[in-house]
Image 1 (cartoon, helix red, strand yellow):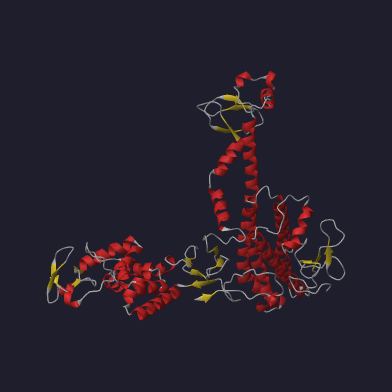
Image 2: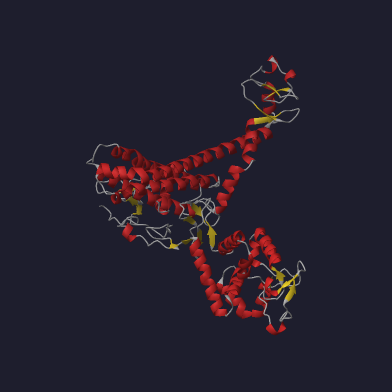
Length: 569
């Protein structure tokens, strides 16, 4: 069992306030725990030991109680001590008096299913003392196991009895194949009946993830490498919420966009009503057989009524006159709306899909880098592999940023039209994120290639290390703050329409985002390494830009909130 948050293991950071240098960062908190099959079995055994010790019942009965109460030890104890008799009746734990056994002393018994009379040693019964032959028990258990997980709550086959059939009896009579299935159902019940634990949705993965109570971040990374949202089990999608993801995925797979395309790019045949796409410049349209109706594309009138007097093959004055009279206003309005809607969706979807393909490619490059290129780079630049971790960190950051950037397009698609101020600010931040990510990726790929192709060590390798590590750090900080701002709904931005693109710059300081024109931490502005920015057209600057990380700080601050760099250094 692995507690996730450590530098060596899967982790997910919590954004808590301003971020500074690594040594001043808040310690990562444990958001989730990854459970292997062995961990799950150990937890089941521990829970059973806890229950049978406290309640003084057998381990088999403890397992029956835990499965009924969804593996919650506290719920078992609370219900048991509140009303033991009711719990026993509900789960089928019947108390049987030895003096009341009518079969004591009988050498032969009759099976209640097949009615064969067999020696007592060939008969089996649960605590209720309803005896059945081993053959009937085997068939009963085999059918129950093959019917699914319901076999974990198996009851006595007698029609009037509700006694529970314990795990020990099931396994003693089941075949080896059925026993393996039963064990599998038993293992999975701990996860599938537990609201705090879920299976990793990656194909073939056998790990489960337990979310620690109180966690508000749902993006987790399984040991298999798959990143997903614990809440909705879709791929990791911060900063977009689960409802937006569900709508976006549905929209990508639904037929609504097909209908929008048909509405925007075709017209119904006036005779048979089948949609027709215009694929030539001429206005003369002919419907496909068997209809074969000929009509004008613009006014949808019969082509026999058209000619030189109506404008010829490439125009229709009837349509223009009717349009001026308002005849076609509603149909054209609907078609224009559908076309605009389709163009908007296409814009966001194409960029969403492009960033996903870029993320996949970057992930493949990262795997190739770790398996092949790092060793090659180590040999050519005479650097130990342990000192080249900054290269893999940069590529891993590219992969993560591509994921975040991809989902910002789903976020942007659902931004309300009337909140123009938020939309302008969002597009500005998104553009800055794209610009900074491209700078990082270019350095991690193009600049790295020069050192991989070199014949020997290059003198500027340490400069490359500093540049790439700096770009990685600043880009990571920017995207962390971007995610936080979008998850807060850009709450610090005035939703009113902004007069210009630069007008959104005021939101930079208020939402505490690094939004300078480059994310590489380069020094710009004054010679002292910091620059003052004026917003709103006033004479006095409203914030100063840190020369180390380019973060926008209030003028009253003497130390950068982001990196703790002293102003003017």
